Image 1 (tube, helix red, strand yellow):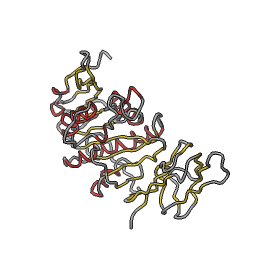
Image 2 (cartoon, one colour):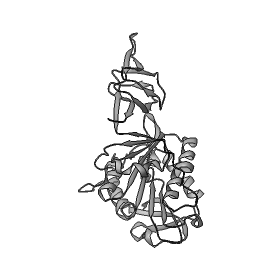
Image 3 (cartoon, helix red, strand yellow):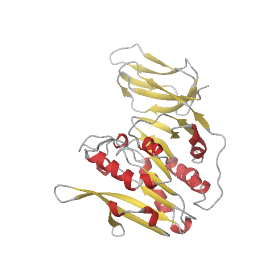
Image 4 (spheres, helix red, strand yellow):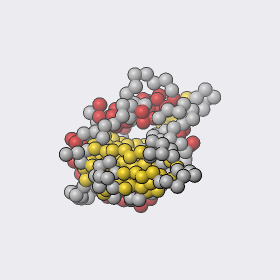
Length: 320
């Protein structure tokens, strides 16, 4: 920890950095007892000016895949590897929630990824979101926001707000790109409103790290994006055979009980196909779950105990 420099976030100016690599602990706010809240941030800058790319993870404290990817990215790249531009790495955007291993912090129970573009920011999480957007995110030329599923697991995929971002999204080589309306208050929504190209990444499930998927995303995806922007040495290698989904349907539980899936993550299903069953407690009759449309299983619930209307799957498809 002695190699990590403390810095007031108000003094941070990423555009000034050249040919350097530094782990910073940014002071975000002072607390009533005299202590302060800080956040880890990595900056890797090349010799020449160029795009500023920010990689964000840990907005939700129980989503660890993105934090691991940020950790590996910082360890893998040195200043001499950056041909031009700057890489900004934010592994834990919500330190309080991360310490509690929960989606939100018990300090204010506010979802950080619904806290941007608000007219007023009164609660600590809202204040931090506004501060990070002002000092880091809004200064970026590109932004990647990495997330993880909750009670279910995501097939690695890239979320975009419009088809104008498809080409950029395919550089990450997950094989799946989803055009989805991002919620007001989300970081992606706020970035796109500020004309900052932004991509949302979903990998795996909460409270776990899928090392294999994370390493693959870093080596085949994130580094490939940097190559395509002429920031990182090597030849871009983007897979031309990737699926674009313009519609996503949520399949919910018809009752309470135990969920038994009969499909796998990534499987293509047909409309009317049996996806699984829900087994009510003390009842022998199973409630069937039927596919509402033909498409791919993008998200699959991994928690077996379910209640009425719990999300069981996301079926994604190309809307004709």
